[in-house]
Length: 173
Image (cartoon, rainbow, N blue to C red; front, side):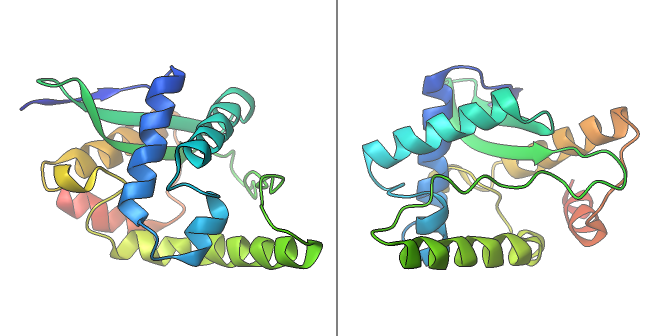
């Protein structure tokens, strides 16, 4: 079952990416439920799909890539990369999507999302499987996603900002 890199373009491909995110994280993390409201439902996945498409089309730093199983044409893994100019603080996440019945709930969700974003580098470093369909893990898709992202960074003379993450995954490549 050969795997190949593919740049997603269609709403259906971005919907599948939201399915993979949802299945990879499950319902075990309150901050994921806040970051991707109702991601376990069709409606929530449509909202996340539309948000990802908006990011793709309007935030220049963003790059999306998926891995397809060439035998089935199924997307089994996905990644979101952001490439920033030197000395840039990066994009500021638009939190308009945050759900809540009151301003207090929305403020709490924004705080949780901010805390999640601030601490996610350690979680990425510690993971053994980037965002992929859980049943398709251990086929090399994660290493393919990281290699693609690093190659893009190298092609624009990018500098690695999270060296521990870089070292961890290059050791696996």
